[in-house]
Image (cartoon, rainbow, N blue to C red; front, side):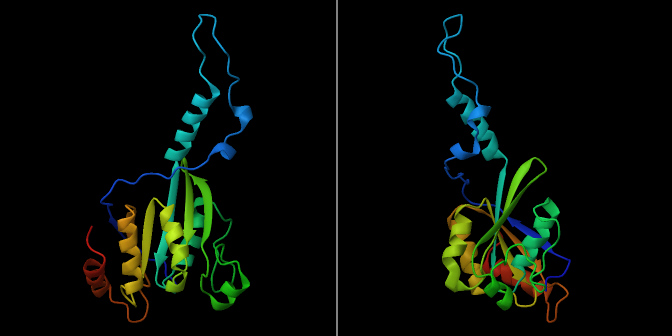
Length: 212
């Protein structure tokens, strides 16, 4: 179970992140666009609806924040997403994996095993931005789900248990995020757990993930 204390370490991406191209036609209502006129009274062409919609779409893109949570199984990824989802207003209550009330683990098999088996995302508008939080499975067998989440993310958050330390599973996922040019961050959990060693966890992270 993830405790209430977390430590954040942010790593800058080596490459500038390029946002994905998407078809936003379904997000813009046709009634929101002005009716285009062939010519104005002065003879000049009036601004087209297409140009107006492009400005609207660019504004929407700038306000998007997509965050993917990756890591080893049972380090607290789903609990973190549940907590953040409640904070930004995506859920009226804080879900719990143990109580089978998580907003992410909704399948009966996931609730029984208390492990995420497929990608899950939640979103909400918070402080002038649209935040999308993506929870991913920890088991390597579901790596395709993790790669899909990282592909659409602005920031990849590696979740590390202070009790178990940095695993090969986490290191490989963070290296993939770096290769994709994504921003990276680390969250340490279980700081007050049994066998937790903060200094050793930091040393493992610097050695296995890197300082940048």
